Image (cartoon, rainbow, N blue to C red; front, side, top):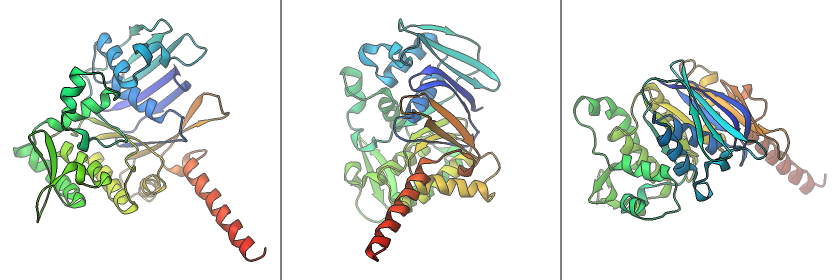
Length: 336
């Protein structure tokens, strides 16, 4: 079971947008401020619980609007916002009006979808004491950080389920150079040869991969669930990014639906090339371009099975401008 369609009407930067997701890897591309994280957070907040009160509370804790007023998620100048979503052909509708209330939930999508949101900021190094602190004090972190720490806290799998994920886990452990251990209230990386290293002493990019390894090992990321990953390329060198692409493909092959936002040329184009040259099964990858036609206008969403299918690609466009700039400097240096 996967998330199929999500629609946004007057929600934050969106006036009327539709996102038709594939069961595999869904890649959101756009400049800063085009709603990539907003879209993913809305999906994450709404697909995990059938109760209206729980959904409204989750939207508040994920977006952290001022004074808990969810009506701030309504697009400026409008009176209400709607977010609709469909699972297995059955849909729901979430509505917020300017009074800050959830007005209705329509339809039943069957059972809830297990989901996990991995923010762009790594969490493994801040895990120690975070759960207790979040539960007892006001913190400036949204609830995706808390949910992720709770998921990291679960014990590793055993038996048949552990055997099923063993090849993927071994690939992840090879990338980070060891196993991820939770001892007491602190994470470590245990190299194959050598002493264990505290998570906060491990390079930040490797900590992000270690987080995914832990979630695979304990079933936090599992078949039938949805993984939302915001800017997986953050703090990763190009070699690690290509390995992350391989991991994403393997997760999708195991039945994990993935929604990610990226600004990275290598990550997005490697996925696109794999799809274009049939190196992955049809429907494994889908791209979404989020863009504004004018500076203060609403964000529209286009889609394609490869990057070439999108009407615009800000990542490629900026690389082209960089090439033109380099060429201009070269010509000038030659007296042109």
